[in-house]
Each structure stands twice: as structure tokens, then as C-alpha cells.
Length: 161
Image 1: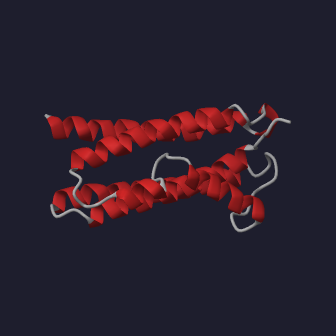
Image 2: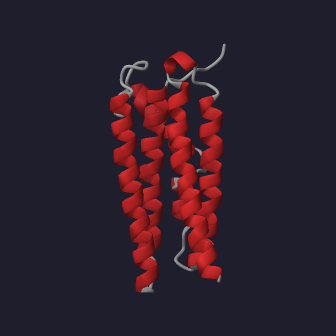
């Protein structure tokens, strides 16, 4: 028996993953002594909030593709748990491991690795979404995650220059 998802379910997971990303960057910001570094991470918190809103709007746009998931119903809770379990952007397990001793470079490198894992996660999830259930819509999430990578990598390069 193969497992399939629809685009709405993937967007539901994406919303949870972005919320986790918010928590990760908020914790990173809270631990910073340097105001400029704190502000940079707070900007990333705002970016993640925008992505939550974008993905929620996308869920509404694609509501005609498959059955919509409510994050408070049993299936929605399963998807949220699944999103939390993967070590991708904002993984609660990774966020809990931040000690405050990490440098900005350490956090950026960690975030870049998690974003790469997120891209791979969504590429894999795309494979279990049939065309008729919105497979092509998952590309939007993948492109957003790639943009995260570009943003973080550019900041790391600036930091190292």
C-alpha cells in the first residue's frame, strides 16, 4: 500500500515547519548580545511569519485540490507531528539545543543545513502527491525554501568577507 498526500496536506506541514522556523530564529535572536545580530534574526522571524501567511493563503487558493486539513483535527495533528519530527527548518529538537554560546556563523550554518534538508524533504513529499491532488503546487514551497537558502547563504558570505 502506498501513501499519498494532497497539496493541502503538504501546505499544512509547511505552515507548521515555518512556525517552527519562527521559534528557532526567535530563540536565536533572544540569545544575542549584539543588537545588529539580534535584529538580523528578528528580521528572519518576520520572514517566517510572512511565509506562514503565504502558505496559509496558498492553502485557501488550492482548497479545490483534495480535502482541506484542519490542524486541530486528528489528521491535521498527525501532519503537524510529522512536520515537527523531521530535522528541517526550525526543528523543535534543534531549537531546544541552542545554548546561547553559538556565534552568528554557527547559527547561519545550522540554518543553511536545515534549509537544505527542508528542500530535500519537500522534494520527497512531492513524489507522494499525485498530479490530480496538486503535485505541481508543492513546487511553490520548494522555491520558497530555496529563497531561504539564498538569503542565509548571502548573509554568511557577508559575515565571512
